[in-house]
Image (cartoon, rainbow, N blue to C red; front, side):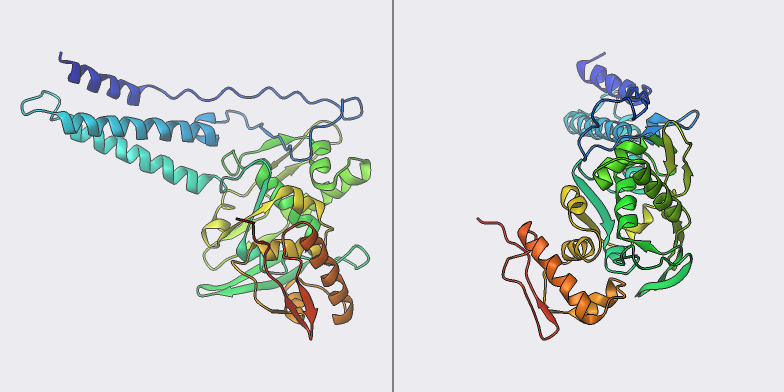
Length: 353
């Protein structure tokens, strides 16, 4: 056998070898009442708890590893094909192997897009522009009664209306939703995964207590009861949620949650800022600003209606000014913003060259 044929044979064996899934992290639950200080706020951990969980296809790192292997093999196949000479015994097999490997590459790429939420870093949160540019997670405060059930038309697209049905959702619910996406981002959607309520509370609320634990539970229950209706599909904001009195909780996302990001642009938020800003007008406005390519003079009335505020125009404008100040102090906005004659004049902070 020639060296070229040996190389080809080795490539074929690499393709046929079963993948090695990454070792599952061993996470032991410890009662938060006796545990050492919790991890930093940006840390959100989860572990799959489904019997027979398929780590080969259910973990992003495994799919990426296989994709990287097939791409590497494809490059080697192309080099072999380019260097072949007439009469080589591998000629008949090579096109078949290249076609098979090309199909595997397309399958892995499709799986990453279909089965996992968009990839983002440890200090990022994501949402879709359509959700941010709506009153889905409104800015109302705790002093205002929450509706047990509502039906809303959030926006209208060329394909039809995007509707919501479920309990009224507010900015805290939006932060919890984005944090669930973040925590489960490296698992295939619909995977039931366990997590610690104390870590989640600290990440989203800055502290842990019985009150914070109950607030988190109520928020995820609301998300579980919430449905977004698109012209071609519907999706729950959370699907399964188990919350025993002791031990870890577990949650699963709707398998179609990824479709939210196929129909709208993905917006990345700085997790530290999203958690730091006061929930309400300020947190909503931060996401709104990040969803814009550039800022133009904008009507305060428009922002009030889009955010779902029930405040009077005067009261909303005061909250708006406070929020603009927070965003400017955090270098999200240029400090030269103004609110006059019912118009917000602003621009994003530009980085120095």
